[in-house]
Length: 596
Image 1 (tube, one colour):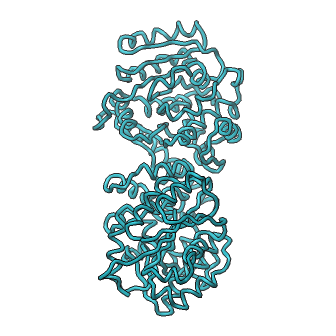
Image 2 (cartoon, one colour; image 1 turned 180 degrees about the vertical axis):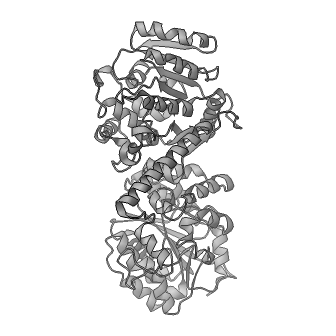
Image 3 (tube, one colour; image 1 turned 30 degrees about the vertical axis):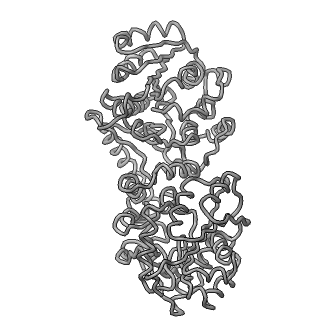
């Protein structure tokens, strides 16, 4: 059936679910865009929704239908399609089923519907899964994944919906109790079942030429589909799903390429994507998927920057007098309009430290404060300086880093070098960092990456938590943080306790009136203290306030870090090969595809 020559009447079923019952603004924009094509929109809410969220949904739809969160989106589609009875469904030329797993419209839905109206089809969608000769879910009746329209957006034409085959399909839909059953009961098999009966189907983004490259073009080549095929939607999970999924099939670049395309080449408000991702996803997943590592030039100024800039302060804690000269030498790279706050444990150390900064007093306002010797560098920041932090827009926090628990002091010294070289190696670099914060209002925290040398490389992966997850989670609850946190997801945290931060990102931390009594007296253990919890809570505070955290490296240190990674990775691969008798780089299911 072709729909050209008239304005088709369309009915849209949009299935929504949010664990917290919150309706983010990307949902409203999607439904407003869908209104260009659909005369009637029914929002099916699986589970609960807040009163504010329900009002937002009602404003951009014709009806909001609440049902128990049972049967996943597929059962929601079924109840939505027949919500007004079979007669009501067949009063429309087309019915649309879609859900909240999509950002869009990246391009107007109108373009897609006008194009597809001229194609002689019974049902269609935006994109197709190319099929695989096996069933990784164990629920597909034919034992493999046939080529199929992806069920996040499908369209059915009236003559097809009137058939016994279509009506029987939904009438006989079995109870769905898991994601795997949703795939096996509907998504993977509907297209094949109807095609075998002679019904015609197609997709708007026909990426058949990608069949040798990927099973799922929208998952692996989203930027290409968005750009060359005018795909109107972007899958949310591309930005947060386990990075191993991408790493097993590519260099992991797909999410970042798509994100940059949407941001730079379309009118879609990227802030809506940030708002939803930061509220619902683990920062560690976003960090990897979006490749949130800034490599900033130390010798060449970046263009741009806001008018007047951000009011900035440098916070330094110094305990080791012999390292005061190093701190002062790097502090000299701060631009003239930056204020300094220097904390020291006692008067004697103050007198020893002050001469190193004397030459900087003409360029900077320098304030010295006595903090006492409790809470290392963390308590002076959150207690001694708690009255000044929110008076600034941006703060660089550093300290004299000396790792005494490792007897070879050069190892700790290299960590200090990493931190300083990634935070303030030159004045040009510092100005570039400030420009980054000015240019991206969602950027909350920049931290040097975790060190890889000496005994530090085992801390990568989940090791960033050490023995501190319980303390950090308790602190998160105390501060009222609601963003995701898991012992299985590493924090994107400044483990060296040195970082750049937008102060608004730390409001939850400084809303707590910290006192020195909350920190242990010396000697302090290597893990499990308030300092270690705060050190890891910074990125969660930032995320809770709607900001992301990222790694930052100077271009002149990046080569050092990459070579360390290569050396470490070669050692790990060699050890794995010796352990297993051979290195297997691909997940089992992907190996089956490659070998089929």
